Image (cartoon, rainbow, N blue to C red):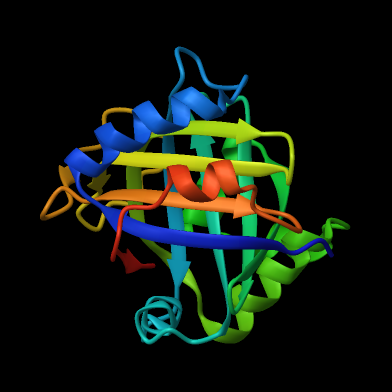
Length: 211
C-alpha cells in the first residue's frame, strides 16, 4: 500500500487564476487532459447517518470512502474507487466497472458482487451490506491537472462544481445539476516523499480552509 501526502484547500476564482499562471510556469499539464482539462462526474456513497460526510467535516484522522467516477461523460472507462485517508496521507485503489455494473450498484442491486474475485468490489460489497451504504450524491466538476516528476507531484484545480439535487442517475449526461453555493474552487496537492520548493512556493496563497 503506497500512501501519498495530500493537502486540499478551498480557494476562490481569483486564487484559481493566479495558481493557473504559476503552475503553468513550473509544471506540465497532465497528458491525459485534453486542452489541459477534463470533466469529472463522481457518485458518492454513504449510510443513512451520513457517516463519511460527518467524519470529513469533523476532521476524523482515519476514514474511508467509496465513489464511482467517469471522465468526460465517457462510459467506456468507469472506476469504482476506494479512498483511504490517515492524517495527511492518502491511498486510493480502484477497479473498472461496466456501465451495467455501475447502474446496478447505483440502484442498490448488489447481490452479483458477492461472487466477484475483485478485492475492491468485495470490500465495497461488505461495506454496502454491513453499513447500509447507498448512492447519496452526484458531483460534477472541471479539473485542470498539473504534474512534476521530482517527488511525483500532482496538483489539481477543480472548479464549476455542481451537484445533482439528490439524483444518482450517474450515466445520464442530461442529468440536471446545479452550482454548489458560493461557487468554491478546490486546490489539491499530492506528492510522494518530498515536495520540491518550486511547487511549494507556487501553491502558497496564505490562509485557506483545508478539506
